[in-house]
Length: 278
Image (cartoon, rainbow, N blue to C red; front, side, top):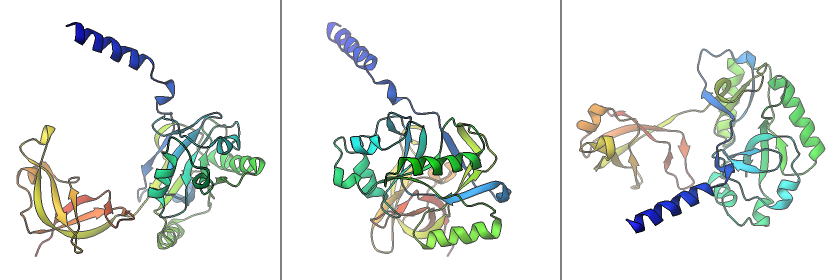
């Protein structure tokens, strides 16, 4: 009993010492673009494959609220104004970027390659169009190479939007973001901010059934599937309860959808779609 009491006291002390910055910041989150959206009401920009970063004028944090250990010179170049954006290394470099920004001891030479691409001013007054102009002014005044405002394109219709998406994907980008031009700043998930990303699909062969845990105990947890090049990965998202009780047979071919490939060539955000009908 004495040991347990000591352990509980120690845990309580640890929790009492947790830093207050661990609370997630209250920020605007995107809904998924739908065909019924009036795109003429939005400004459009590229969706960068970066790491979301929020600056409160003093501290740079992840979306989780935990601090980003950026070099002092990087932070000193940022304004007092609150900013929201993406730390970015360029298209197709997410995994390398993630390694850089998550180091507890930052490496200057690595951070010299990182850009803070801002797309919002949390809590600022005015419409998004007005805030976008203010962002350009802030970047000009800061005059540091690692701070940029993501370009916002106006006067877009559906045809232009699809052309922009195709061009962005062809250039190695991952999609588009739509900001409602007239929107006042608000936090939480909202149609004031939309993301447009394509789903790709491919096929793989089921090579194993992986057991489920928790609510899926005694059922299928995930499929182990094999790609044409012989590599395998887990496919657990998108399965119905009926499919978990009676899973696709070993050796059958299934279709899955995914957002993009990692640098290792494996599907990212893969989701089961259907069994291929022979």
